[in-house]
Length: 287
Image (tube, rainbow, N blue to C red; front, side, top):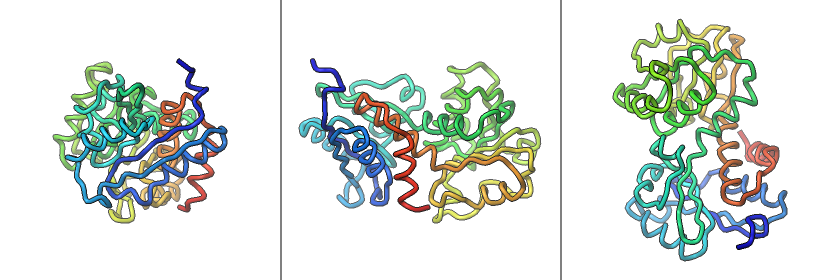
């Protein structure tokens, strides 16, 4: 069997709803050009096709038959796809969500590169940031990946706050078996949690153009906090703008999108892409 590197062309797709504006396909294609391989990245938009998640089995069968090498998966399919795959990576299993599917010899393996995207972005942008106590807002699909990343980065105590406390509890329960006891907890007392924190992370959609505002009352911010964001439409959310004006160290959400992509590209092709190409493409598509 030829090694991965001898394969010179790849067919990849993105399955999700409302993905017309996704930056993932152009980022992957630019990275492939730079690496000297042919790469076709197709968008499979459920909204345009007027389909729901119930079409996933049919779409996966089609991808397998048509020789796709891999698929990225986004909302609303990251959980619905789990029972349809042949195998899950330990990360995907831990998170109960898949965003990357590698197809080899007809077998489909689900991975999760969202957590890697957050962790890698944080490592590069926030060297030396204190990781004693961190407060995370949001416990949806992205929230689980971000919490996993924060634990992997070495956060000593992570408090998760969500408007639905049961969702926060689910994330804590899901990760507690993998990390030392007492490192993860749920709270509803925003002021108390932030008072004792080194940093805060927004893993909610609040701050996006269609969900304006901030996930916490901004008077609770103070200059010694670091603030990380996962929203990247716009790159500068109201939360980051306020935090930066106070003198907080901040990291925007674009990097998470970029580095989940570089890791997916590596899984699809066996080639580690140049992150600067992903970065430049992302930037060229506007903020």
